[in-house]
Length: 356
Ligand code: ACO
Image (cartoon, rainbow, N blue to C red; front, side):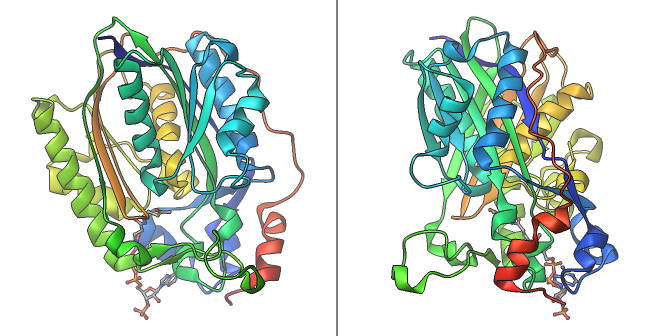
């Protein structure tokens, strides 16, 4: 049975930056509240579609793996904000990058989507049915922002991350993983107006609703406990873990999860200040930046953990392979824009109104 090793990685974050000070002009909030309650200083607002960001991240991941798009057997696109429900975002990305030999599909497990997709890819490779899989996590959550709801509008941002996973004889890969869901509490974090419920005559503007404190408590328990279980399942102990790369929803959730596990803050990767919560994109963006910063080394033992709408949660122990440098560099980039983040958000304000 082959191992499944990450051989390529990449990200795409759109250029328009929405700062906490910008948010003060849209809703009744403050830089001080957002910084102390969430750890977020700024986030990106996309001027392009989900599949455009995905295609750029994918091209960087392919170059890092030294592969052509036609080398890919399968694209798994983790997202809850696809351009359209039909065709899928995965097939749109396939067309945009020219991955003509790949099957493509979407997978929605909200903020846990990347880890659901990564473990699916791992199992298909280990079973021998696929050799090279492109796993992408991308969100354009800004589309749903409602600035009359300050409890959610300050949290989210846009972005994309991608990895290439290949069948390999090299040691490493996913040593253990756990996926979980609890649909009975789904209404505590949901996005009405984003699907087919109700009548087309009553179409409502999409927005995210969340019972923040309840979600917070559940996230800490689920991420902490599932991480502990996968470490045990892998036959490892805390001392073996080099770096925890958690879903970036709130720095207080990340700190509490690390404390619950007994990990030192130096063993935890955090970049939420720059991007906010980009849902399924947070972990692949964090993997890419951790590699760029030298925080992942050959043979590093990593723990990934996530919690999101559904509810869904996931944790995995991943042992990095021997290569931490990209084989190639892609020049892929988004088209430039002169628009500011506040200008890009004008349609949201027109639909929902301002919250101040
Ligand atoms: N600015 C200023 N004040 C605010 C804001 C804001 N943006 N938002 C809420 N407040 C106020 C509240 O109204 C409340 O005021 P009150 O005491 O006068 O009633 C006070 O701040 C405290 O509100 P809480 O909701 O209790 O604040 P909390 O510390 O819980 O932080 C937060 C809220 C950031 C949402 C937190 O609960 C959280 O991070 N929850 C989990 C998020 C998460 O993990 N989501 C999962 C993934 S998302 C996905 O799947 C797409």
